[in-house]
Amino acid sequence: MTFLDTLFWFLSIAMLLSGVGVIASRSPVTSAMFLVMLFVFMAGLFALLEAFFLAAIQVLVYAGAVMVLFLFVIMLLDVRASQQRRVKLLAVFGGVAVAGALAWELILILQQPVRPLAGSDTNLHGGLEAVVKPLFANYMLPFEVTALLLLVAMVGVVLLSKRDME
Amino acid sequence: MEFVVITMAKIAVMLGVLLTVVAYTVWLERKVCAWMQDRVGPNRVGPFGLLQPLADGLKMMLKEDVLPRHITDKALYTLGPLMAMVPALVTAGAIPWGSQLPLFGRQIQCVVANLNAAVLVVFATSSFAVYGIVLAGWASNSKYPFLGGVRSSAQMISYEVCLALSVVPVFMQIGSLSLCHMVEYQTHHTWMIFMPWQWPSFLIFIISAFAETNRTPFDLPEAEQELVAGYNTEYSSMKFSMFFLGEYAAMFVMSAMMVTLFFGGWSLPFAPFNRPATTLWIGLAHVAIFLAKILVFLFLYIWIRWTIPRVRYDQLMALGWKIFIPLTIVNIVFVGIVLALWGGR
Image 1 (tube, rainbow over the protein chains, first blue to last red):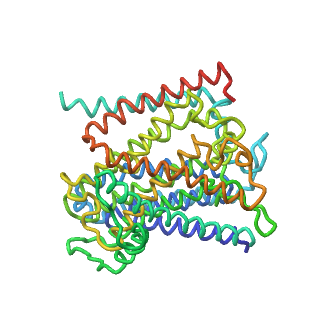
Image 2 (image 1 turned 90 degrees about the horizontal axis):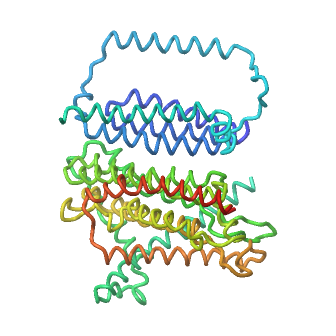
């Protein structure tokens, strides 16, 4: 096992453990912090693939921005109510069913031989240009449409949340 | 193996220098404050009070670490100060401290991690500092720290956006996100600050940097007359001093970013300081030039702190969201047009 293999296993196991921490911990703030850890280890996996841009974006967007807002909301809510939650039978069955279906799909997919897409090279690319060039050259229109959709959604949210105040 | 050893050595040297500079920034802060208020300042420990940081550090370590009884989540309470300090130290690893040092027959680059997305890494890791303050405020389980934590997280989230958007024009001109390319470009051309179309970026960046590091006039998280001491009210001993170190290390990193982005990093605009070093002494001189430029900005931070009063909270948020964010977007378009018409590259 080389140094990079060791790092891979360390990061993967740490990531899975923090994932368990997210669902197992009672306090929502602790859960959120475990999720932040998960994102950081995931960024480590991206960095192992030499996709430094993706790793940086992963940390910047998810750990740095999204989770801070999550934490912000959790802190402003009353957390004691959720600490006393009971385990519901239906939720357990639903969760197990969804997890089982996902695992089954993953097993089916992983049994397939790896087929590279036609016309793409098999080297992994996660550098700045490899991510940004297709976005702003080949797929410019879908990218802009997505941006517009997000803007519409944002305006909608502001409108909905302000309606009560009139 | 050799790579690991060299990197470890670089990290050790970097942290040593960084923490020393940080400790002496506290001394400088007290001295400058004293001069501005017509006092003497620390002058008992060593000549000019120069050993004061050592005495302070020792005192902090020997103080009792008080854990107030109303704190329920001890893990998060301890995590707070750690998260406030560590991100700033990590960030310093992506910044080029000098060109290179010819040492033991090798060319040693004066940067711990020469990444092609260094700027994003800097913003990504420095955005972690919010967690320190948020967690400290929440885990303290008392009113004023909580208010300080909420305020601070809102402030830092807002100004992170301005900070990141304000430097986009600089990278449009360089065509790279690497901080090493940044300095290289400025050695070949001229410093960014001498290009008038980059002045708006610099102004917005420096003001947002003040807000991001919670320094006056934007030090609302620890506004004494409203919040006692804000998020660090319930902390004592080393945990308290970690917040302190974190704040000053963040100031150092932000100054380093300003130097690297706008003031030519380790270079000076004449030979032999405008190209990578060939001898050890010039290599060390580059590091010294870099540190000297940073010192100017640290002094600016301190100077402003003891000159300008604190802004009101709604003024701070209005400035961020209603003025700076639209302004940065207009600035990106403006610089884009300038570069397209006159070909700034």
